[in-house]
Image (cartoon, rainbow, N blue to C red; front, side):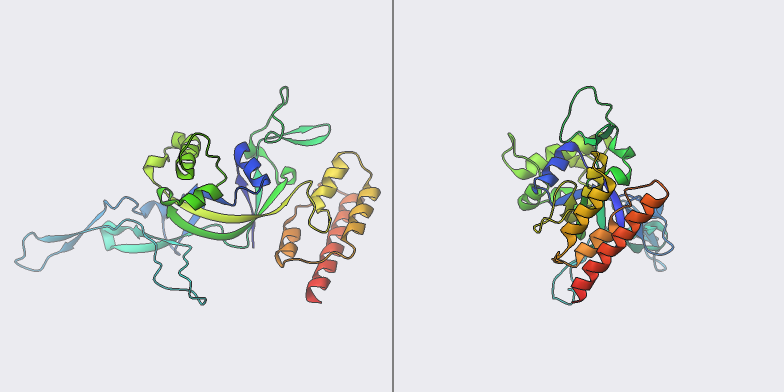
Length: 306
């Protein structure tokens, strides 16, 4: 399990908050992928244009036999232990003109990872503001690229990752991307418009039909929300402190809320472990919150084992 950032537009943040968005697609790049050991990303052949010239037998004309590289592909022929045909990697021709190799390309995400959402934000005397909620004037909004983990309010739990051509998206998946129909006749067309608005200027528009990583996720938590038992998350404790409530009062309120809490899923522990320490200051306060975190984890772990 790893904890990684992911940037979303304001529209998509609102869709996540409303539980309308449970998937996202990201163009496959060197930054979000890895290839087999010893491989060089720049030697991957994506367009099927590379040619390997095999020396022909004597007296054969022409003297070389040309082998055109295949396009990247997925292999669904080998089912997993449950009999399902799942796949999380992509086969891409590698250094084809020299030796006709094919390498696997893997995503840098995997099921079980926790994503912390980066969005447009600002600091104020009341704590952190989020433009997706309130696009007020006079606020010096900051790019989501510069959002630190401690200011993020949303955590997502990755449940599946697979490669796909962006135009292969189904109507069901397009709706799960959180798009609104607007004036579009289908969710796929609405998604294509959204895709172009974000990616066309980077050379990855809908018509390019790039390979993408498809991530399916659930909402682990959103700051300010509580679970079905009324249990506050540690980030809610941070929010209470930013709003001016006392340290002791916040500690006691959350401590009381966790008494008798029931562990609903195994991933609850992973989510808690993924929470950043929201108090970067040194001294007794930082020591107290770390001890508090350990007590919560120990209590939940005990319930899970019991």
